[in-house]
Image 1 (cartoon, rainbow, N blue to C red):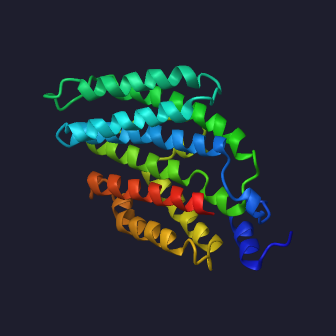
Image 2 (cartoon, rainbow, N blue to C red):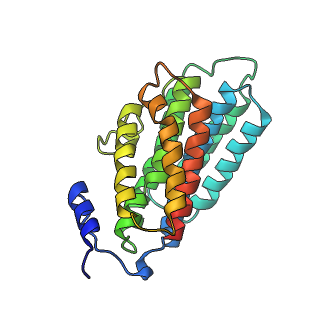
Length: 258
């Protein structure tokens, strides 16, 4: 199947995609692909809401959001039997729940919390990453879906790292793979996401059916982009968390509409 000129230009620019424009049968994510993506987002949302709970007055509503995210993680990870995932999810859930109820009068969590929590979250995400590699190839994703594939998890990870740094101190590295977004610091994540959103805009140029969703993502991204570049001087965790949550929602809706 022939590629249009704009898509050919995009594929040459990013240098890592060698996919052809797919037929509508390849447009939608498979159930396993959607399940993997949703599980990644849910695991990170649970962490983000835990940090918001610790940093914003220990409100019950924030604890409920964390618990709801844990429920979605449990739901979406079922059947994804890769590595030790089925053992790591309960261990991670226990870490989150213990932190939610830990000495609400104390501003600090136990001294070893960051290391233990990072290890538990890393085990879940590494297992899901293994599943994502396998799921991404079955069925083959279109070029647009490939660009979108890990954006929801990466934006949610950005919110997780940002709120952790603002409220409890930065997490330990979650991956030793320098090519993984889990190994990137906030400034690296910000630059990579900015580039990939621009590539996505090029890929979807002229698609009137998705223009409004993409525009909503771009508006929210521009709103927080400067704060992310200057996070040491301009911490705004509430704004970043809410904006990233909206971006994730719009990206997943956009992906389902393609």
